[in-house]
Image (cartoon, rainbow, N blue to C red; front, side):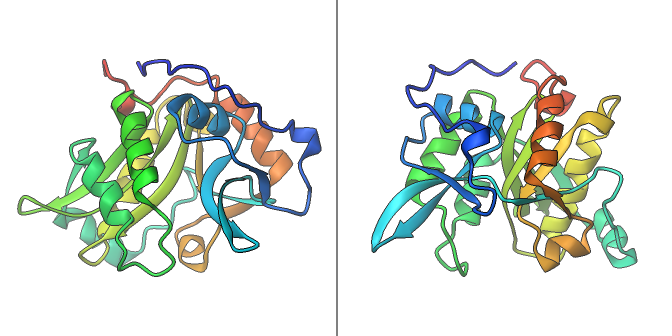
Length: 228
């Protein structure tokens, strides 16, 4: 099981105080493991934000949350064919997956070295995981995120070959489909047109937080247990 991190010294705003029309909930704090685990458990995730020309650590809870129902994943005929072309591995190249997701060549990239270091620490404590696609011994795609009980909070994905990241997402959904699947939450932060084509839907913040509360009482998927 994951190693409990040191408690965070920071107090996040109570849900009732969150602006119902603003995705940004709070500024500041840090990226220590205890802070991250606490934040995700409250329905928050961090991203850099620039305000008045200054960069801050922002904590977000989208008013309309992007969620992929485990029974709602859309697998096209071509993607189904691609599933045969890749090897799936879990947690064998976590740092490399995060690094490639944060490549400066990607448009609108936001994963800084501080974020890479923070999630690497979280991974080594058992809270963050990668699902990877490999071909001929080469890492060609993957995703990473934070797993707490029945929550998997997807952070980012990348691909170097066609469909490689989509195949990783299909593999992740398969890993989450167990006897607790109806209580698990696969969070992808925001719905984009690309993610919508794969079955991602929008959930009002209040509904997401209710689902999250139930999901946190569910055991980790076997693939993400250190003893599993």
